[in-house]
Image 1 (cartoon, rainbow, N blue to C red):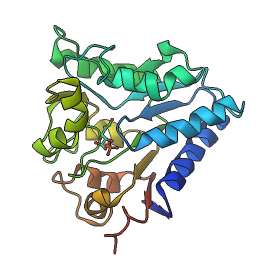
Image 2 (image 1 turned 90 degrees about the horizontal axis):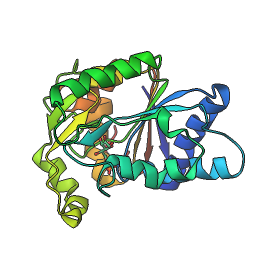
Image 3 (image 1 turned 90 degrees about the vertical axis):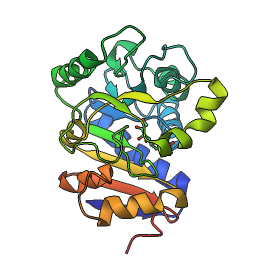
Length: 243
Ligand code: F6R
């Protein structure tokens, strides 16, 4: 596991963006795994800037997002579909048909969506680079503590701490977001390269457990120690509890 410690959250975003830009320049049809949440927003801004400057094109890029709330419509502002359009897709030349989010809208069979999502990742040839954030409890995607390290895309109940961490947004939207479809830890471990970003001292404990703790389902991100190509990019605050 490669750990890169940088001075600021901006530097983390820029570093992460350069990794993605480098990959897309090498392979214009790269398959990217994307994340939502606060952490990747600054990185997405860097990607938009690179596109606007004519540095890269996303025309042939394929994307698979990690997760989505169950029972939420695409157009609801809290949905990760809306987030991705707002923070990235609307501002770049990506083909919407090449973007995937593991949706489970009202009425859909939650047991089917996981398998279908796994199949579409496989059909695309697998994920070249998976971007990740990390929860304060060590979750990746919405694989909460105790998730099986071999898990595949499925519906998960969110942990109380995650519901609390997300409540600023969910309360505003009047939504009770307690269930999500998420890629599994096994799905993430199958990707060819992982880029995990974390900023701020709220993430310091989770980063220490993920990077230096035992591999344990109690800290899902620690499973990344089993992946041969992981880069963890953190600012000084998120690195503050590393040995
Ligand atoms: C988002 C996701 C989550 C977040 C994590 C950190 O798609 O899968 O695991 O990456 O909850 O969220 P932020 O970045 O908001 O601290």
